[in-house]
Every structure is written in C-alpha cells, then in structure tokens.
Image (tube, rainbow, N blue to C red; front, top):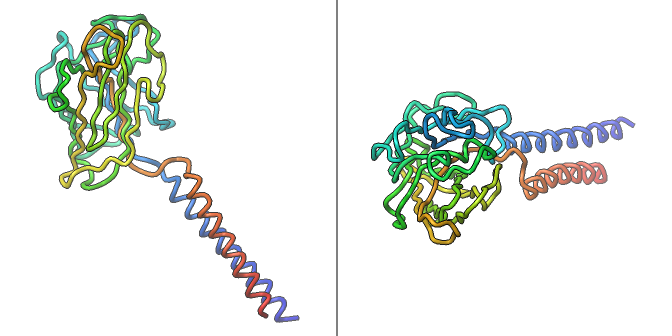
Length: 267
C-alpha cells in the first residue's frame, strides 16, 4: 500500500515537472520584442494638409500599446542636407535606444501633399517618404548603427507613393521590389504591396545594418522615383510561437508523462 502511494506521488511529480518545463519554454518563446521605428516625413504636411509630418501609432508589426516612432523630418523643399543623421532615438515603448543612431543618404524627403498629393485617406506614415531618384543600388542608403554585432533582426520596410515606378530594397544579400502605380494607393498596410519583411538579417561585426534602396522600373507610374516611407526593426521572439516550437514543447510534456508511467509499471 505504501509503495502504491509513493508511485502515485512519483507520477504526479513527473507530470508537474514536465508541465513546468513546457510553461517555461512557452514563456521564453513569447518574450516581448524590442522594436525601433523610423518614419520619414515633411514638416507641416500630411493627410490634414498642415499636419506635423510625424507619426505615432501602430505599423504592420503588431506592437500593442507601444506607439513611439522616431521621425526624420525635413522642413524645406524636397531635398534635405545630404548625410542626415538621427540620434537620441527611442524604442517603441519610449525607452532610450542608447548608442543607436540612423544615418541617411538619399535624394530628398518629401510627401504626397508636396508631390502628387492624392487625398487624405492614407495612413500618415505612408504619406511622407525619403526619395531615391536613381536606379543605382549603391547611391541611397539608410544605415542603422550601434546595434548588437553579428545579430539577426527582422526588418519591415515601407514604400508607397502615387505615380512612381516603385522601390527596390537591398539588405545584405537579399532584395525585394515593391511596385509603384498611379491613382489612389492603399490606405493601410498591405504586405508585399506597400511593405515587405526581411527576416533574419544580420548586423556586421560593428553592429551596423545597411538598407540600400533605389527606383525600379516595374511600376506603372510616370516618375522614376523610389519612395521609402519608414521602417520597423524588431529584435526578439515573435509574440506567437511557431507551430514547430509548440510541437516541441508538447513533446516535452508527453515524454515526461510517459517516463512517469513507465516508472510506475516497473514497480
């Protein structure tokens, strides 16, 4: 009788241990990500024809409750000083991104209102944009400096402007083209229409991640222009574990239970 009671305790302890391991694994998989947002805009421009050009809110990457964006704005005409650098950055939760900076080399920063305005329905972040007037991939770039060295990040890049031929982005050895067009553009975020996700892009050994962009000729617009509206840089696990990870965690629990039952049978 005493042996049977001990066996039941052993089985229960094994089950509790396996469940605890699974719970800890799920917790680590769902750890919150660190997000750096950047918006390009033109001061005193936007959907309300007089907006600030800044953006606050959500992007295509869901980051509930964290709405802070860093805004690289230009108050003059369509062409800002070459080699603009943005420092004193913040993450989306408004904590300081210490040591991180963004340098920019492009043909200008402008907006739909200033250049081929199309109305007031677009998301504010999709209104303003940095501009590339070249088809040369090496002439316009955004460099994010001060990140963790040799580390993978997920990058969301946004490109939308009416009457443009479109934008090609190049990150490390990966590239993707978002086609431009004429007429009204998408009011919201549409994957591989006005934004693209580059997954697992590694920084170099100094902690730099470079994004080159240029005008492509795939769209139907009449202007050879490559807009770059903004970006989101994500470091950390996705909020929803991948199916394979869930299966692995489930397997841990099953194995734990099986070992307990097998031990009981041997008794």
